[in-house]
Structures are given as structure tokens and as C-alpha cells.
Image (cartoon, rainbow, N blue to C red; front, side, top):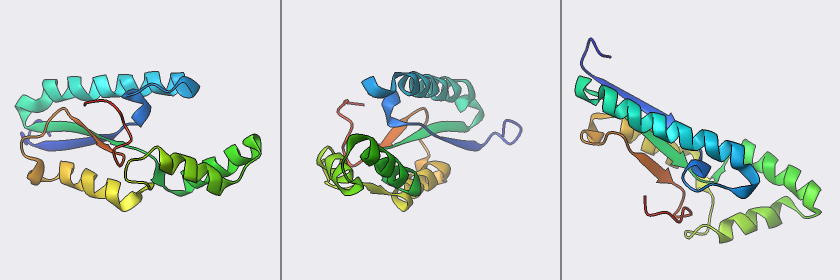
Length: 133
């Protein structure tokens, strides 16, 4: 990429890096570190035409989250549907994200359409994160 003076790097970073979760502090710390690395790499390589950005997906309908709901339901003596409803209530748009919605943002960041975007973390979470950035 440096030799070509062009490149796009898109990292996927968990949302708890932006807003630490008391039930997942180690994951929160790791994700916050990834966000710092993302920003640092953008500053190091931006002058070489290599843009480094990240996507911060919120709860996204996938086998992983469906398995999580199933496992949490067993522990909490509830149903996966009730757990999903609880998550949806925390999301302003009222639903989980879809994998293709995350993929479209990644595609944008990997394309020339994102020409002046470097060093950012885009939340794809339906407005769930409470932070200003």
C-alpha cells in the first residue's frame, strides 16, 4: 500500500470500546485499545494515501447474537425472544441491525467514495450508543 501510495483499511471494533459495559470490562478495554490503534494508524499512514477507519456495529442479527440470546435465556430463566425484545428497547430504531447494513458501511469505507474519511469509527448501531462521537 505504501509503495502504491493508496490503500483502505477497515477494522471492525466492538461497541463497548466507545461505552464500557460493566458486565464486559475486559472486552471494553480491548475495544478501546483497538479504537486508539485505529486512530494512530490513520495518523501514521494517512500521508501515504492509506486511510484507516473502523466500523462499530451494534447488536446485529447473526447466528452469534441468536446463540447469545439462547444461552442468556437459559441462565436468566427467560426466552430468547424476551431477551431480543429487551435489546430492541435499547435501540432507538427499535430493531437489531442486519449484517448487510454493516457490510454496506464497510464497503463505503473501502471505496473511493470515502475520500476524506480517515481515522474515524462509524457506529452502525441504530442510534444505540449514547456518546456524542
